[in-house]
Length: 343
Ligand SMILES: C[S@@+](CC[C@H](N)C(=O)[O-])C[C@H]1O[C@@H](n2cnc3c(N)ncnc32)[C@H](O)[C@@H]1O
Ligand code: SF4
Image (cartoon, rainbow, N blue to C red; front, top):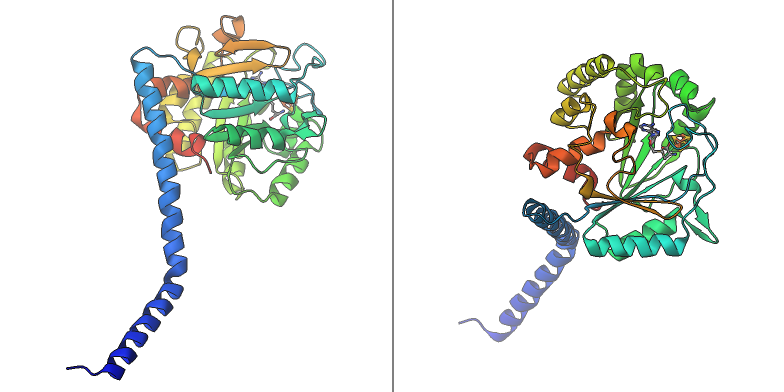
């Protein structure tokens, strides 16, 4: 039989060991808890996307992506820019209150991905409010993934989940399209950037950079800050620098080959093949994106719907959306991990 003091000693020793063990294993415990919560969050988000997809199959056409062109002002005048195609940009801007009310109403309709566009998106201001405040509000409303596109020459707001930077070629070509010194400014911005979300490159292939696709892919691959690139063709206007169907086919073949060799091309393989098909008037799943454009314009789907531009659509997104609505599992997995979840 164990006597009293020994029992007390053993009990205290046991307690001591448990407490020490708990202290030592606390970081591991919190790591497991954090991973569980993060995965729970990802699982819940995935479930919500699955629900949206099933409903879309039975005829409910709710928007999934909310895109807003919040203003048109820009510090650059890129050759291919559709915003600048008819001269200086219109002085139109959405106010903070308008943007918030639009974000809330589209969220209620089902949108889960919020994307801000411009003009130069980062230059948007309304009183003391800036793009960072819009991103913060988007998260408070409940959007799973918030992002924006930038030319990388202005302040970068790092509270988003995703940042898409425009890269249209190596230094000389990028500057020829976007203006002198723009490439170096963008690269400095990326070098100095501390961001815990994902940075993607967006390239618009046009006459001036058609012969520089491989160089651009390699440049994106070598930049440690960039996860990969999305490749688009110019959607006219402007018409002079847009591509022929044969040129598009060659570019797609090259991108497919580079993707096969392991370069970080984020367009899905099927999406790339569809990029060579020009007229998307009938195929575009317009309902997936709601579009609000400064000036009080609202579109269910692309603002170019039904225009001549639609017949020469070069945007990668509608191809990928199309594959998602068709239920292509590979595209859904690739895209959701990259563009749809919170960071
Ligand atoms: C309108 S810009 C706004 C954001 C920012 N100012 C920038 O340049 O990244 C958004 C994206 O659309 C692309 N873009 C502009 N005009 C286009 C066109 N005609 N066809 C296809 N993409 C275009 C730009 O290159 C950029 O990557
Ligand atoms: S920076 Fe963006 S919005 Fe400005 S001109 Fe270039 S593509 Fe257009």
